[in-house]
Image (tube, rainbow, N blue to C red; front, side):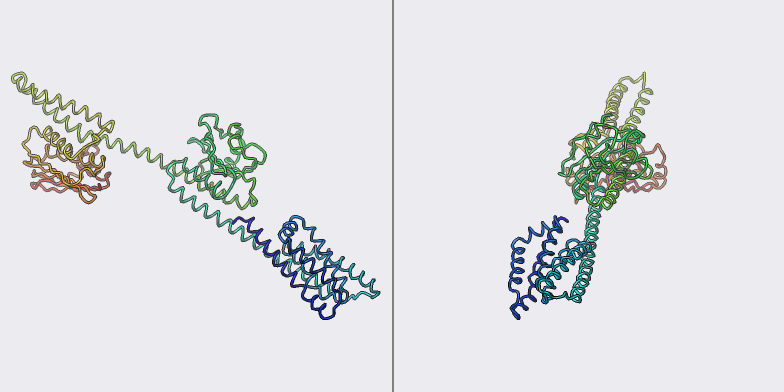
Length: 556
């Protein structure tokens, strides 16, 4: 229910109560008439007046609120009733109070006193007229008693009505403040989930023009260097967003002293009001904003300028109260936009760093191992030449294939390419091929076992497990001197477990992991980092002479 509707409803209810009082106030004159039989025409006139008022109460209520001077006719009527009743005028006391109560309840203390000031001369004129007609001297005691009583009653009910009106205004302000705080709280929650600057702008505008019911609002943002305002976004009260301004110089407002009131508000760090004047010196922006009575509220985060908030407050009845809410929203928006920009910048830097680490790990896990094999093969070929050419040629052919594979691996690492359908069979077959190429000079037997729903693994999880298995196989080939190695993948219950075991010579895990902190070592530490990025962990178990086990557990 709107405030205007509530006021109108209260007005109709009060007017109905006063009409009921007007009818009840006729009981004393009716009792006097029944007891004495005097002045039946006067009683009939009062009843007729009440009937006329009862026929059109709402019209009279509306007309009286729009034209308070109409109450003078009722004051004249009750004064005539009092004067014509003569010595029975006391019976019309309650009836006479009706217009005074109307003035008190509808127009407060001033209205009640003004109505009393109008009624008293009319009452005196009626009393003196009645005394003159009856050739009797006026009853001064009754006149003084009536006059003082009317003023006391007007003061009492007028003050009470004014107090009620004051309390109602205070209640309305508190209710509006509570609604604004609810809007700000809801806006704060929505801003926390916003992932882009444009989403923050849209949420702010929706809160101002939707929840707070302002007819129009526009948000402009400062660039990273704080040199110009641009990226304008506006919304009207009907819920429609305004067409975007061009992002080029057409929609830019320079943050210089000649930029207009928006720049002045930013520089002075306070809210300004533009009434009938342009907010900026940019014609295109002024046409886009198109607000006659505009509050200009700077959005600043510490010493940084985030942007500007322009709100149409033409129809706002409580400027100071609503301004506090708008400034709170502007402050929340500045924090949200500044935080979003900071998060985007950090995410960008983190993505670059993670990409560098990924490329380094891929190069170490694949390229460096293959290059080691190529160098080892070429060194053997040089020792065989020129006497054993027939043995060198097959080795060189395999080395050429290995070099081409290295080229493909480098391309995959740079472009982050990966087979779209890496099935369990393909996973095992590729690892088998990799193990055979890496362990050409050893007689290690490799056994692969893949169980469970391998298809449930995401592409990233499959690639991560593949790279970890590659590194583990390379370590076995180069260092373990193992007779047998097993690679097991088990996908079950929303988890995937990779286990790589060998029966080689083993090592001290603490010593090797401590050495892995070096910049050039991505082996065991790289496997743990990969598992961590997949949301799981990698445990390494080994002892000298007892082989080694790599256990990786990640969510599907």
